[in-house]
Length: 168
Image 1 (spheres, helix red, strand yellow):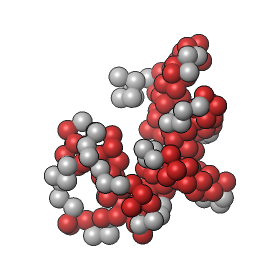
Image 2 (cartoon, rainbow, N blue to C red):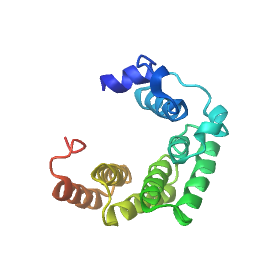
Image 3 (cartoon, one colour):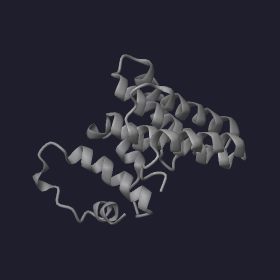
C-alpha cells in the first residue's frame, strides 16, 4: 500500500527513533523487496550488527540469493529448535515456511507448507501470524497443483479468521 511504498522510498522520518535505525533498515529492505523497489546487495547486510536478530533473519530468508536464504534458514532453525520464546519459534517457523516456498524443488516447497501448517497448528498464535501462515500454505498448495488441500486450508483460514484483511 501507500505507506509501505513511502517507507521503502525513505519518505518517513526516522531520525527521532532513538535505538530503532537498525530495525528500521531491516523493515525498509523488506518493504523495498515487497514493492519491487531497487535494494542494496543483501549479502552486505547479512553480517551487519543490527541484522543479527529474528527480524533480520526473516528478511534474509526471503533473499533473492539462494545461499543467503540457506544461511538465514539455518539460523532460523537454530532459533526454532533452541530455547527461544514461543513467539520467536512461531515467527521463525513462519519465516522458514515462507523461505522454503522460494526454492525450485517441489520437496522444498512441500517442506515449506509443513512449516506453515505447523505454525497454524499451535495454540495462541497471533491472528496475523496465523493468517500469513495459512494464506502462504494455501498459495503454495495451489502452485503445487493440490487444489483440494488448498481449498481445505482456505476453508480453515476463513473459519478461524473470517474477516481478516488477508482474506479480502
